[in-house]
Length: 452
Picture 1 (cartoon, rainbow, N blue to C red):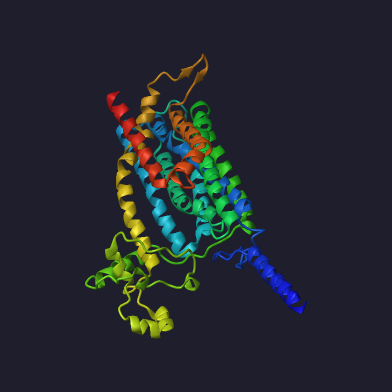
Picture 2 (cartoon, rainbow, N blue to C red):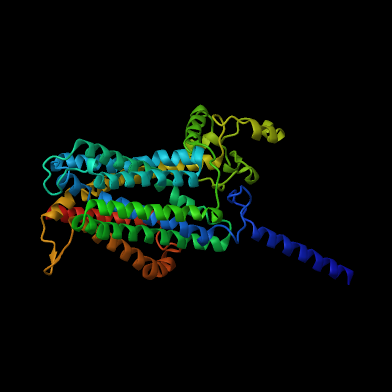
């Protein structure tokens, strides 16, 4: 009888321990007070919806401006098509490169929440400057709207400053916002891991809806009412969603910046080069790896056989000394001489992405044309529907947005269940396979353009 009581007592203790572990999130994240987050009151959908809101707003603003920018430069600033296209490409190119800097600063110094908040304020400043350049008399392009041969120089200066403020804001929002939303889900918790997959679907839906509204509603306001009213709508909308994003602060899970993500990659290369003459160990388990208890965040990566020359960065040169002085070695190891298997595998992943990046260059070149010459070409087409409706040239982008929404919906709801059974992958097709299929369709489209 006493033994049974002890067993029941032990089970009660284990149950309480499991409940305690379930209550708190142990994935190195913190709440807004710097403490271990409570699972019930932080993260998941209660936090990610605030984040999706500002992504929706940012995409409306960016595409509402970017898709019709070529028309503004040729109609209002009276630039020739060549210089106007060059200015648009300069701006979109910088907007694409700035996330590299924003992501680096967030990972190294500020953290994602701070970077998103600061960048959104800069973005809002850019939208506000655009609005002022259309409403303040001394900053307007001309005294009389519609009779402007050459716009004022001050208007061009303020206009381009505002545009590049938006580029800087985009540079901080794009690399951090989606990742910050993903941080709200614990990968080690089965239910939250499932919800995380749904989060990315909702994220993509918000992006597509923002794009669609930007190239239809905002562009229509620009063409049919005024550029100033469109800029004012975007500025107000961004301000409202920024307040909403900040209101979600108590519900977020935060991760502290853990140093430059680039430095460990260089350390792997240097360590592998220094030990280039060493032989590979007979068993990959002899390669160096940090204990899970010493991982500040993230997870351990398994060793793979590809790019084996990088494995030399994780070769332990003095095995006996490492075994006898394991603790001291872990504390005092030289990262430029010895790196973990996880770091080596991260470097392999980066190198494996280079071919994917190279094959996407031509795709990027074609995308750049869509915001310049495609829009101007659309302006020469018959865009009238009925007696009173004329589709704005930049709204040609809506075809791509609608196609994206439909294809994602059809894929997720209709194709994935069948593909999942056929491939065994929970996504249906792997991400790389989907990229490859997308590039095939891209080549087919190029063929159609060349024939036309």
